[in-house]
Structure formats: C-alpha cells, structure tokens
Image (cartoon, rainbow, N blue to C red; front, top):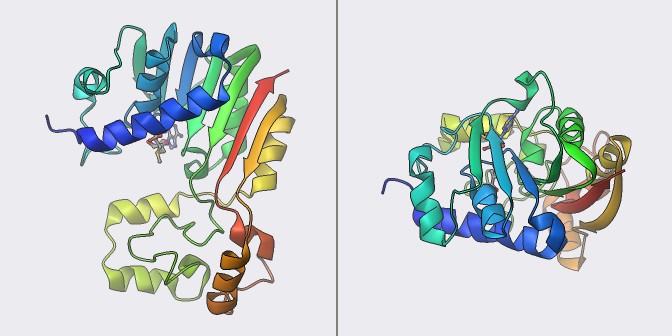
Length: 254
Ligand SMILES: C[S@@+](CC[C@H](N)C(=O)[O-])C[C@H]1O[C@@H](n2cnc3c(N)ncnc32)[C@H](O)[C@@H]1O
C-alpha cells in the first residue's frame, strides 16, 4: 500500500478517543460530519463508533499526497478495524458550497480550525449543517501565537526556538532553512484566532458550550518566555496569547 498506515492509525486513534471522551453515546451512533477531514481518520473513527452515516469533507484529498492515497481509504479502514459501510468522503472547499448539509447529529473539526482563513464562516456553516441539539466538537493544534504556532516545529523547536515566527526576520530564516513550498503554504494559511475568539464564535453562531478545556501557562512556559521572549513585539500581541496552544470545545446547537 502507498499510504502510510502507521500515521493513519495514529490519527484514527486520536479521532476515536476524542469522539469517545466527548460525545454522548446515543449521538455517536447518529449522522457524523467531519469538517476538514484530511485523510478520513475522523470518518473511520465515527464509523467504528457506529455512526449511521459518516461524512468527511476536505478541500483536497491531495493535501497529504506524500503519504495518503484516497483510493486506499477502504484498506486503511480495514487496517484499523473500521469499515466504510456508512462512510462518504467528499472533496470540496467549504467556502465554495452554496448551502449547508442537512440535519447532522454531530460534527467535528479536529486540528482543522487553525488552518482556515475565515473560521467564523466555517463554524456557522457547520452549525447550519447540524440539527437543533446536535453537537460540534472542535479541537485545535497550537494556535498561531503559541511557541510553535507556526506549525514549523521541525525547524523551530519549542525548547530551543519558541515564537520564532513572531520575531523579526522570520521569512528570511525560513528561506535559509530551506523549508519546502508545501510547509510554507501551510504556514501562510494559518489564521490568528485566540482562545476567546473561538469561544465567542461558538456562542455567536448559536452553540451552548457544554465542555471547554484550554491550555494554560505554567512556570516552565513563563521561564521560556523570560529566556526567549524579549524581541516579541508586545504592542500588537497580548502576552497571554503566547501561551495559548490548544483549545477543546464541545457545543450543543440551541
Ligand atoms: C491539519 S489537517 C487536519 C485533518 C484531519 N482533521 C486530521 O485530524 O488529521 C487540516 C485540514 O483542513 C482542510 N481544509 C482547510 N481549509 C478547508 C476548506 N476551506 N474546506 C475544506 N477543507 C479545508 C485541509 O485540506 C486539511 O486537510
């Protein structure tokens, strides 16, 4: 098989755990929508939880073309013990869709929220695609202002080069490091949303928040800031944003 089974298994397990821990049992067996589904790991996970329909949408299944071939999705599901009986993968840019999907019971945005240019519009579209009482589970990778918020952690590790992207000369450093075009494109498309803005988007698009977990600062992070933070321009960036890695929200559509 061309696809990287081990990476798929890891991503599948990640999605499986999130659904397991944060979505109530009867909802898990309903109709599931994965927004920015990538390799379909969330779709496979929802199918394994017994979703009656598991739909994933992504703007391009070539996104992970170096390690994923969408034609092998059924074999990947087999490899992790899931199945494609209720699964559907759709290729399409959500911003191009003319209308929401009808009446899903739950939706997930797993590590996709920080990658879209207009997050509020996507959350609104997702809300419109849920039935009243439907759930949205959103979980992020490091947000932009956090130590590895560039997502270029292979080149700028948290322990030795945190917040590199918030300091002068970053583009030149990327060029000097020989970072490839794919990774630079992924970096440039990141949005700059903060914890509070995402919470506000949930509430503003008609969700009641029923679970909220946020990463917080700690003494190690403060020490990191003391050591590496001096040339970050804090006239435009609030210091608390520098410690905002991930946020996990579960909302119920009112
Ligand atoms: C970091 S990946 C996460 C994939 C998957 N959710 C996972 O858990 O591995 C973010 C995904 O969001 C997708 N995406 C970004 N903008 C999108 C859009 N406007 N419409 C649909 N998908 C989008 C990207 O193509 C990418 O596959």
